[in-house]
Image (cartoon, rainbow, N blue to C red; front, side):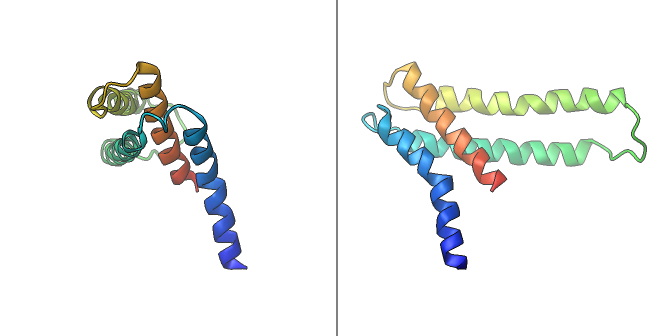
Length: 118
């Protein structure tokens, strides 16, 4: 029963991404490597965000609003935007259209984000 549950979760996790990749023109342009690289960039930026949040923010014992902590959270949130910018500008080495580039990077980042949830 455990192996059945594992395969069920694996199909539900990877299935929609595989169907989307094969149903769109992404498979024709061979953008799988771009999607995988974007997934690794997303995981890397998430790790950097985690380390920054754990290093620079303090856990408050009361539930009050601390403007200093909130101001520290704002620039840390831009790490995701920097990772997406890097993925969109540096990862694609082929001459593909912007639409396909956005789809490939978005698919990779979404897939990595879903792996963190599961």
